[in-house]
Image (cartoon, rainbow, N blue to C red; front, side, top):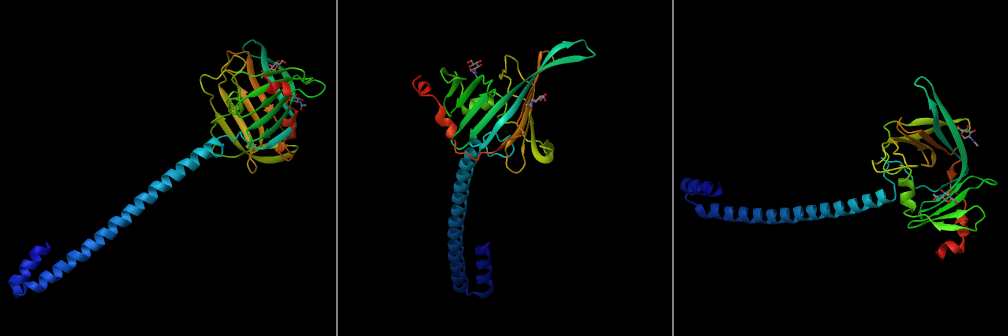
Length: 262
Ligand SMILES: *[C@@H]1O[C@H](CO)[C@@H](O)[C@H](O)[C@H]1NC(C)=O
Ligand SMILES: *[C@@H]1O[C@H](CO)[C@@H](O)[C@H](O)[C@H]1NC(C)=O
């Protein structure tokens, strides 16, 4: 194109040197622009690459720490001195009426999200049945009188929650409300189907609902539903008194030395 133009010019005017000078000068400025553009694009691609790496690292850290707001936030600094687990078992079902037996147990829950620790007490005094000290890589089952301690095989912080079907439970697209101590409280609601290989008390749960405070993410409740064929019908974990953890995590100092010797 430029050459043609130069040819035309030289034919028209006969002064092709001017044209040529102008062409060289054009070419040179184009080349300069081209180099600048290449450097610019290079920088842009490099920056995009850096941004992508930083983003993916951040996202994986977030997912690891359960800050992905699209899923139930199970790793939260929180405590509750009297939770209530109700287990619904079907005693009879004649097709028109289902009769349930409900067994309720009080729970103590102290969770240290930063250090991935959970203290879970099944039953409260004087009916404490056992205590679990769950850590990032190991979990111990301590008897009521602290005399016996055993390692819970295959359990750790992450697996404790996975075992309740609480990992990767998707958030519902609308907030809901729960009555907490007589106050209507806005909660984020989560609903999901637990993984196929999950068994709870030997049964595969079909559905999990969970609810956490919309502002603080503390957990108020989760419910685990079992298929109709199972006599175990539902497990309802209810923590009306759940609060952000304020105490130091001194409860973890109560882990008996004999556990550490295991
Ligand atoms: C626990 O929940 C069950 C079933 O909803 C209820 O009957 C029982 O009163 C509750 N117990 C406590 C201590 O809140
Ligand atoms: C902890 O031990 C008690 C018996 O001391 C047992 O009933 C309970 O199932 C154990 N809990 C877990 C999670 O292993």
